Image (cartoon, rainbow, N blue to C red):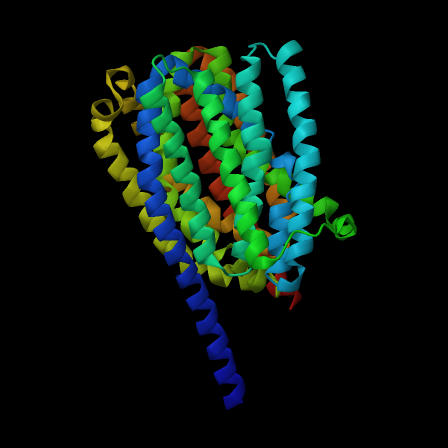
Amino acid sequence: MIYLNSLRSRLTNSLQNTVIRGTLWKLAARISSLVLQSAYFFIIARSLGTEQYGLFVGVMALVKMVVPFANWGTPHILVKHVSRNKSLIQAYFGNALWITTALGLTILAALLVLNQFVLPTRFPFVLLLAIGLAELIFARFHDASLKSFIATDLFGRDAQLNILLSINGLIAAACLLLFVQAPNALIWGLLYLASRAITAIISISLVSRILGKPKPHLSLMKSEIRDGFYFSVDLSSQTIYNDIDKAMLASMSTLTATGIYGAAYRIIEVGLIPLIAVMGASYAQFFRKGASGIQGSLKLARRIVPFAGGYGALSSLGLWVCAPIVPYILGEDYAQAVNALRWLSPLIFLKSMQFFAANTLTGAGLQGWRSALQAGIALLNALLNFVLIPAYSWQGAALASLIADGLLAALLWGLVLRFVRQQVSES
């Protein structure tokens, strides 16, 4: 009994040390990325102005809504299996690259056709092609590389790749500022594509050198088709309720309103960086703890949520108070972003409540329930945007986001409690 208690204590300490170590690496990388991304965001926003920045944001939002289906959830399937058996890394990494290439190019072709003949607002073909390649192919390669290091607990390498992405983005922004006399969304889109392509090449090379060259084993995916769909729906739902407002603003309101709202939302995303660091560092642990059921993954979440919620509340308040400095940083074109940022500031707290409830479900093998709920909220968000944007422009988009994110946080925790009670009653 003494031996078992000692073993249990060592395992618990090891788990905590892994999460703490991973979080510190993630946080260090995210803080570095925060500085770099903030610099490149300020350069791009000021260089392009509200209208051209709004055009870029609108096209990016459209592409991001279909991004999750470009890899069929393969990076998350990789984490699920490799976190439990590291010898599978080459097969699942190879699968992720192969499936991303095939599906990404297919979806991009469909998106270009829809843009040409179906969408109410026709975006520039070359800009959509550039951002499509950057996000559907090269950014997905980079994501698969990140997940490979997360699954094998190589958080230092994961951190390096995150910083690399930000450095290349800043270099691209500096090129726009220094070498382009009349910056516009199209030129920035091409520079953005180049930065993502270079990052992907380096990322794949690093994984291949450290963990082994990718060796696709597609037969392993036969039993994962359903889970891959669930992951894709889940991530697509998240993207829809994060980005559909920007795409709809670009087509139903004005590009200037899209630029104002997009700039404010970008600041919110910067504020989420520490939460995303913790979420990324603990992601593989949710699968390990969740192997015993939802009580295992919830035990991990309970250690994290108090700190995440406290950070979310303080950050939301801080952004509301500091919002007036935005025009001094981005320029007078963004004066209305002060109000937009104040409208959106509660999102950091709401998302801090969502993230770990969602991962509690995923780690316990309840991805289907999570995906169904998030798909429903994404649909609600789209409907709210459809009703509110024509009448209230960016204020309507902000209100739709607050309603959707608040409801999602409440319902996710409701699901967690339901399945905990179910597991207790069955035991």
